[in-house]
Amino acid sequence: MFKLIDVFWAYILIAILILVGRLIRQRLWFLRSLYIPSSVVAGIIALLLGSGAFGAVVKAVNPESPLVKGIFPETVQAVWAQSPSIFINVVFATIFLGLYVPGWREFWRKASPQVAFGQTIAWGQYVVGLLLGITVLTPLFGLPPIAACLIEVAFEGGHGTAAGMAPTFTELGFAAGADLSLALATVGLVSGVVAGTFLIHWGRRTERIQVNREPSPGLEIQDSHLPEEHPSITIARENLFRELLIDPLSLNFGFVGLAIAFGWLILEALRWIESVTWGRGGLQLMAYVPLFPIALIGGIIVQYILIRTGRTYLISRPLMERIGGLALDITIITALATISLSVLGDNFAPFVVLSVAGIAWNVCAFVFLAPRLLPFYWFERGIGDMGQSMGVTSTGLLLLRMVDPDNRSSAFESFAYKQLLFEPIVGGGLFTAAAPPLIVKFGSIPILLLTSFILIFWLVFGFYNYKQLRKHNLPGKV
Image (cartoon, rainbow, N blue to C red; front, side, top):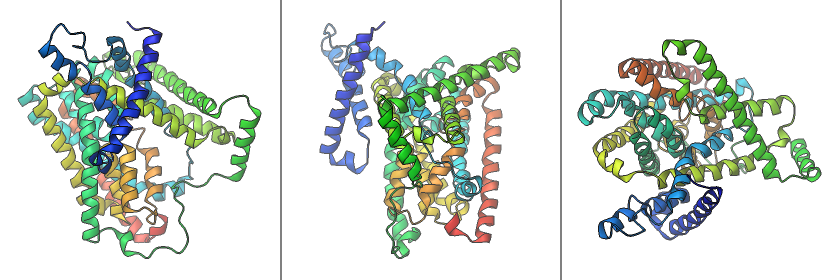
């Protein structure tokens, strides 16, 4: 058991690791060229200096050495082990706080093709994973059926979701799933940048990138992909910060706490409803659903309340992004630092199978489905979704910047709006959390049929929506 002073020093060490990770990233050109975040570098450093790597070497040389557990005290490692499932709630609570919410008509025109393509990739990851689970992972490697969820959790969800799902995997008897999903998320992050960069070069060479063939607009294009806030909101926020004896960061963090509290209340209500309804028959789902996807819904509720009451000036979106970014860095570092290398070594073959299958599906979906689901600027708009489906949202935005830095395709707006109908469901949303217990309860084949049906639905809708938008021929409004 650790004390409060152990928590203090655990996060002091995290701060130092971030600085070291930043320094190493800046000195090594290949890390910069792959756009590997400093938090990932810091997490890998912590992993290598822990009991699984450095400690194992010391133990082989001198089993009596005090460094057999690595250079970090056990109490610090105990704090780190519990941190990812805590800080991921902060990350998801900030996703929609302070965001501009468009009207429904504008939202649907811009987001519907992106939603269809993004949902297709996500549900396809489940279908691929379940097929692998039925044919390879369970019969050949002896992994439990819920291993089929690892591709979607790691690739679509990223490090944060993988860390947040660790308690669910453990409760369902698949503790190795936490380590495998985190390792897969790292593979997805690296392969997303590498594959995305390769595809962008291919797109330019074959003239599939349309903005390369268009003249640059005469007017200066704004760098931001979201509408500028009204001047009255800016003035109200400045007056608020002058009049209140509170730091703006503290005020914004208060709304994060409110969003998480709403999420907790919703989750507890759902668990109570389950206990008095279908739960009596033995179907337990909400007991395995972590807080973080519901915290995202709590954030939407808080943002909606502020919009309806005309108090959106209380939240600063840049500060929300800083809060979420810090929480995500802590989540990534502590999650990577506590990976069990022995578990990864014991499951290396299925790990490689899952990695290759996930990468192959994402790339093939982009090459073959994006031109048929995205009616205008398919390459520019599809590359962001492919990047997001292989790591994190920032990977998708990075690839968007690489292919269309001036946002002439309006891909940034479509990508941002899509998240409203994407994040609450997959990529760390409700189905991501519910899929493992559903597989345990009903088996792989019924869930394969369910996910296949949903995949077909999004494909059919996407093809139909493509034809409708092309028919009206409104590229500037899509």
